[in-house]
Length: 118
Image (cartoon, rainbow, N blue to C red; front, side, top):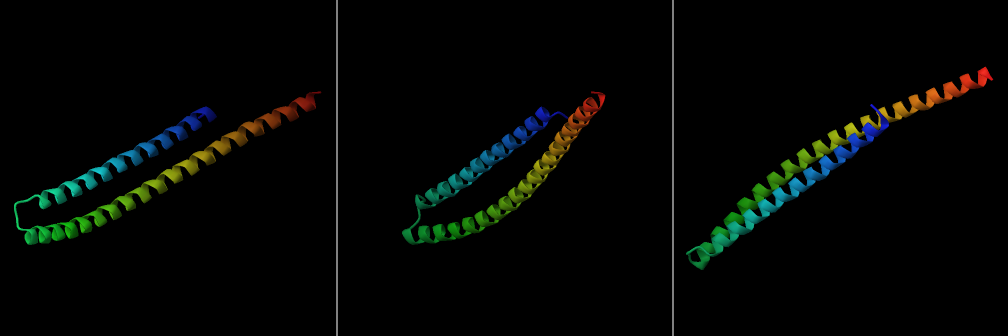
């Protein structure tokens, strides 16, 4: 694998991370929209003020609990994915360093060989 290919591979990995972040933000926006929509539905429901407030309070408690669970799950998955990505990047860097050292080592050896032939 050439140095150019390794750089392109790392570039693609970074782009993938950016796309995942965007997808996560879209999902969080959808969740927030659902919560706001649900609250608006409860507020405009044909119930008395007291019943509406109680229903809204119960709904908020339920949604808050569910949101916390979903957030923690998403955070765990994101942490795991981040660790995997960092490991892959580190391995790629190590491979790149090995290849560069190999290339430089060959250049040094060939320069030494040329010096002996002089």
